[in-house]
Image (cartoon, helix red, strand yellow):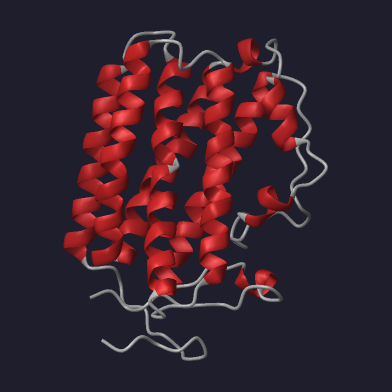
Length: 250
């Protein structure tokens, strides 16, 4: 169909039920698989390493497709590419933190993470080409699961984490002087604080609290893309990146 112009009001019907069921079933299967593989106690950092390796992949896929559309002159969504790049950069630093905590020490964990990421990338490229809203919905479910997983981990391990030191990479990322990339993924007014987030890290507990809050930002941004076809913070980004709407799903 004809793509809507940026200034047009876009009607956003509910996401079709078959797509919702497909995404929810797939996420449940993936979650159950990870629960089975990492059922052994004391393997949390390895589990998180695998999850964070794979978590970056959908954002790579979205950017690949959006760059293709831009190259063909079909779309103009510079603001989306910027936000997805910032989200991928955020997930990269989650991954680096997990590596610093020893999550990538075992060969089998690295093998699972890297091969899963390769397959997951192409699956997301295809899904995003066919049904962008469906792809965003599935990732919003995954980010919601990540937020809940880290919340539970913090609650269960609060006292232990408060005695553990902060990895240097976490200080470098969350307490940097230049927070441009960190601020760029805070687009959702639903969960955005009144002032920019400026974490202060005193223990590993604070690090995981930051990661949990990051995942909630990602979830909310993706949910807005599904429900409204826009990144809700685009008015804040607008001086450099004009708002764009996603076309109604086929």
